[in-house]
Image (cartoon, rainbow, N blue to C red; front, top):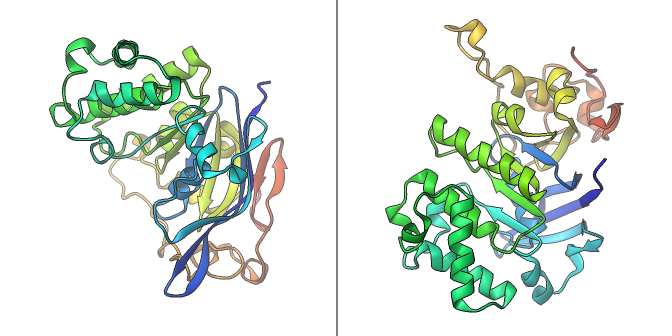
Amino acid sequence: MSSTLLDVRNLRVTATRHGSSFDIVDDVSFSVAQGEVLGLVGESGSGKSVTCRSLMRLLPGANLALTGGEILFDGRDFAKLSDRAIRAERGASIGMIFQNPASHLDPVMSIGDQVAEAIRTHRGVSSREAWAQAVDLLRQVGIPDPERRARGYAHEFSGGMRQRAMIAAALACDPKLLIADEPTTALDVTVQAQILRLLLDLRDRRGLAIILVTHDLGVVAQTCDSIAVMYGGRIVETGPKRAVLKAPCHPYTARLIACQPNHAVGGRLLPSIPGQPPVAGQMPPGCRFHPRCDLAVDECRAARPPLLQRAPDHLAACPVMAGVA
């Protein structure tokens, strides 16, 4: 079995607003092994993106702060590194691709220059060597005629090509872990499948570990080895993909699965989860899913349920629900 590359323990991210503070990532723990693809799943606002950005200490706002926990990467705690030290690790140890590449690619720099800039910064090679490596990376991610397209700009690329360019930039310094934050959301089905195949191919060729952030369990089923389900800033279930999808042990996970389109029952309305996700700073006590859960009992409302083992490597934070075959 591959050794653990990333071990996140009791991660906490706190927001400050109008003089008050509240946690938006609350005591989150998970791990990723070398070569593993972990699917981080949940509705919008569940804390997935903030969790991933905190791993690189790139929180999206001055009012957010990493206030607790450990981020053990290859034996070092990234939570304790100085600002200068963590800057050196971004890209070199952990790369990140974003949901909307158009907002993260510089519109006035050529694509090749953006990829080459990261190579020069971290590897200290000449401009000519960095450019040659950038063109080769664009070739590796499937951009046609990379020598010519490297001189193009983001607005000249299609959505799928922009995402490939961002993947090339994220791989520029040969990181061990790639965080893919909703990388296929804005793409059509055909291009989405191509990007997912590319990520898996890169995993196989480079031995990359990948955290795939998504709300789409269909994507998870195609690509991931394991799943961590987030709700209200907490992990509510985690385990091997097949175990979680076949026998979910938390009502939220079960309802996410039930909401997925099923061609076998075409023509019917898709089920939905009643109610709305909790708002940051106004979280309910106990299990944060209990206001939307028809299985909730007094125990769920009174105290936060711990993550308990239900099967080998399969944990869930529900005192009521057992695995559903």
